Image (cartoon, rainbow, N blue to C red):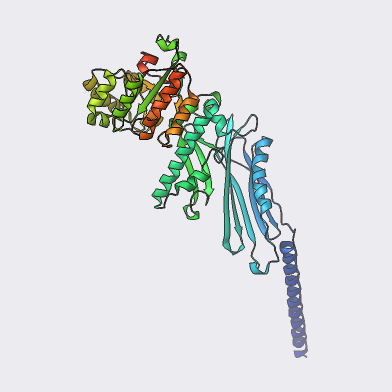
Amino acid sequence: MKHAPRRHHRYHFHLRLITAVFLLVVAGTIAALSIYYVNDRPGARIGPTTYRRGTSYDGISSRSSDVFDRGVHYVIEYPVTGVSTIDSTVASYIDQLRGSMAVPADDPYLGGDTGEFNASYLVRSANRDYISIVAQVNITYPMDVGVHDAAYWTFDRHTGQVISLEQLFGDRAADGVARAVLYIRQALGEQAAKRHERVDDAYLERVVTADTIRDFLVRDRSTIEFDFGQGTVAPESAGPVTVALSIDRLQLFLQNDQARRLLEVANVTTARSTGSEVTTECSRIKCIALTFDDGPGAETGRLLDILKAKRAHASFFVIGGGVRRNAALVKREVTEGHTVGNHTMTHPSLTLVTDSVLRSEIATTNSLISQITGVRPHFVRPPNGAVNAHVASLFGEEGMAGVLWSIDTRDWADHSSDIIYNRVIAGARPGAIVVLHDIHPTSVNAVPRIIDKLQAQGYRFVSLDEMLGNVPAGKIYSSL
């Protein structure tokens, strides 16, 4: 009697165990089928999960989505700026790449793997007038095939429109963009050299052009940035590549209201707009000023012969080391009616040195020139054209006026006499200041043609002393 209940309990226990196992199997099968149905069936979706979160910039939040669709896992974060045009521009870029990704879920070679699409954004900087945004996309296909892409824009927050690099430079866009292209190529070459990689100049010339850097980012009030993503201008192993350009070397091209809303722009002006009366003869006749940097050197004597034969005056911004080696040439420059200006002792970017170093660079060079010629320079040209308001104020303390240019030959990059000649003739205007370098034979070779052509048009070639006279110190000039 005692064993019957025990056998009865064992029977029910086995029944329950069998039932439980059966139910687990059924549940597992249903779950597996469900997962297959939901995840692998073309067009299936999990989510989307959408939420908003704040950023470190007021008025900007995120809209995120986590979706599985047709064998691809999409994780996307979109910016929400409150300006529909901005939001749609960024979203369109991301969605266009998303639409281009297709992984067939039933491909037998994928082994059940899925692709992944990750997209997000970064706000580089923003204020009430503008916002700079980088969108970044990483696409991972099965079998570990990856694609990286990035796009960036600076938007006007009032209109929602993209501010292009050409718009940033305004009426000096042609020269400004050309300079930016050259500086970016240089920076990429320097980055490659630091990674001990061979620099392919021809490749950089193809991928970094005026068309490929139409957009830019504002990193801060003194820096613009170009984000090339990963694997575009350098090997994948180099990671994301970014080039930051200080605006100190671009001040000449930023003299407009648009640039001043975004950046801390130093004032570069014309002599006529300083409020002081310019009494030189060039106020009445067609004058143009050829200026030559980085000498004196091996080509300077030949250039002086050309100028003498053509009865033309010019200006020479000399470097202290060259002055020491070629004192006779510097003396000849002054004797034959040319202006000798200060281009520092060692050619540093003056925005990157201490105040004491800057003063020493200027004062030592002035002293050398004065000892040789008996004339103390009044004009200084900052190396690389790098200047800001503080540097200009230090020029003023030294009794110097800064001089940039209005015609940019870029003869240091394009060693072609024909190109140099064409740029000068195309840009010639009364009161223009041309920048050249008398250390390059191709530049000196272009001078006779330039003089002959413009003299035939009624231009007189004058020195800066003849064109500008004794303009106030502490200011930066680009033309009469």
